[in-house]
Image (cartoon, rainbow, N blue to C red; front, top):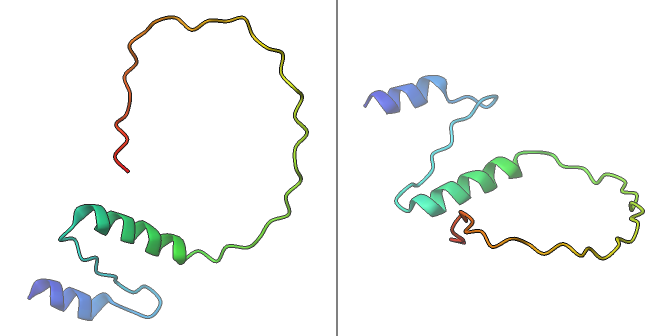
Length: 74
């Protein structure tokens, strides 16, 4: 009841509320991010391709080390 009253009192054309269906947390987060990004009026920017020098081949050999790796979920 309080939430409904709050929405009725504060949801305006200038500052609307958006409700995210959060039964599936992963989908909810991705949908929220997608919605936020869709609200930004992007414009194409001119892009100048950078000049990259060729690299010399390195003789470096990586050490054996057990890295902490972020899991690849997606």
